[in-house]
Amino acid sequence: SRITFLSRPQTEEWKGWMQFAFIMYHYYRAWSAYNWIRVFVSSYVWMTGFGNFLYFDKKKDFSIERMVSMFLRINYFPLLLSAATKTSLDLYYVVPLHTEGFFMTLITCKLAFELEDRFRMTYWKSRIISLLISLLVHILFFETKAVNSLLYFSDEMHFRFQADKYSAWLGIVCGLLMTKVNEFMSWAYGGESKPFVSWAQRFSGVALIALWYFSFGKLGDKFQYNPVHPYIFIVPLVGYLMIRNSSKHLTECHSTFLEFLGRNTLETYVLQFHLFMNHQVQYIPVVIPGSGEDGETYLRVANMLLCGCIFVIVAVWARKITVSTQNSVVELVENIRAKFSSNPPTSQPTGDEEMKPMIDQDDAQPVQSIEMT
Image 1 (cartoon, helix red, strand yellow):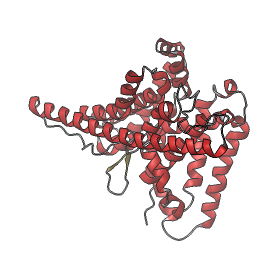
Image 2: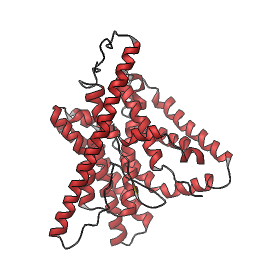
Image 3: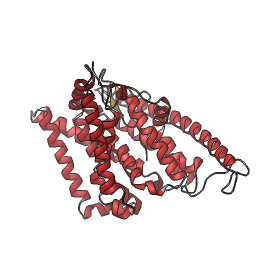
Image 4: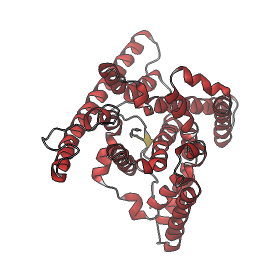
């Protein structure tokens, strides 16, 4: 039988537990976990390149509707919230990271199709050349003084973009290898049981994570770790995926609760700074009397749970409003194009779209996921 690597539910679950870790990291000031959190952030940006590559490579949908749809899904709520609360976009730094990642992936995939169609290149040759050109552009920008142009926006954006300068690009590379990975998964876990393969994959995954940790992850000084992070975060990421998909059961099962959190990561990311915490995560809202810093433990836990419930409810509501707005605007764009263009729109229906589409390998329909911090 066919085994699909990184299905939508598993991807949502992955985002869900990472988002929970992000929030707890800020809530409990767990600064010792800084290096792990950096890997989680890069994993989100990696998903942007990975998922969007799968979508574009399968659908060939480079329409204005698609661009408007994804831009709104990523930016609409954060921009609205930033304007309403007079909060700097630096606090929502992953929003521009994902926006850039989406458009970079779109351009890279479009170039690949142009090379394939105009120059009659093979599939693999066109994809590899477009990836190399994209990598060259990344190097010329991020490894030269050109990167200092980001200082025009802010020091924070300058740092954040450098920390994830290759994350989305590496996601595209992994997306290109997806077919080969699925072939391996089907061979290893789709038929007769192969315990040796499962355990070899698990030990390899643990070895990769250990290699990252003992080489760089345990560094206590973030100023030592940050410069090497963009080049080595992929090591623990691949290690995790090897462990998480080391059997048919592990690949096909997932946590429904974490999947739910994963579907709302963009909204929970931006709202954590306003509802679950505030003043740039320096303070925690106290709703229940006596649940402050010196309060009883049970009152502080009750206060956290109450604020958490309100926080999640508002995040789910914000997501529904965002998706509704997204679909309405895209429909408007389609109607305008239909009225003034002889060629009807060719974009895929947006439906209940998230920011990072994946592809269901069985029916080739877009599988949405979103991102976050």
